[in-house]
Length: 103
Image 1: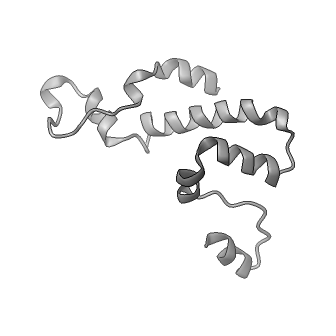
Image 2: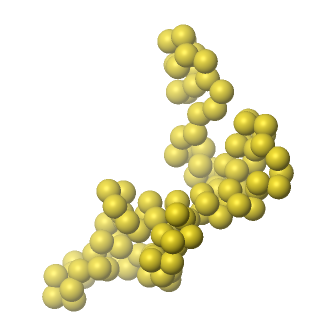
């Protein structure tokens, strides 16, 4: 585990978030872990779930980590790879609005 390795290297580790854990516990689980690990109040939970949900959506639908499926969806029809299935999530959101909420 990364936390064990960092501790062995002499780092004080309060919290480690990795993609495998995120896949297992999802955004709500991540937020519960943050609230407990950083001593945050329960009243922050809804706001943090919204923030991290928007982050996850933008991570998949924009920038360097954009899904190759979504990137293919954005190409003009004559340039699309017909063997790639459409992205199930990105097309159902107004990305401009999600970006505004995120900011």
